Length: 119
Image (cartoon, rainbow, N blue to C red):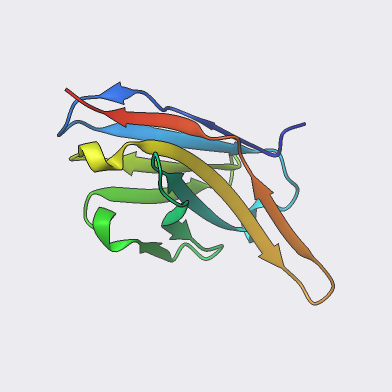
């Protein structure tokens, strides 16, 4: 079973909005720090947004004020609400779940969903 499954990617015009979802099939989802990453064509993968298990959020500067990360622990799902999209937001978006204990580290990735911003 794939631990993380992203959905919601699409072709959208500049200035448009899109909501990505990431459904998790992992135990104790609520303890994980969840992140969205993206990889644009020809570029390295970069972190976009983070939400901790306590709900604290952080964003990369280029999306601050335009993107919102959220989580629903009752559905084992996180979301990325994207507004005012720009062509430079075009990328494959990946979901990541991470949790560390004294004894173990847990790190899961989804397969990605394509977001294309173009007129």
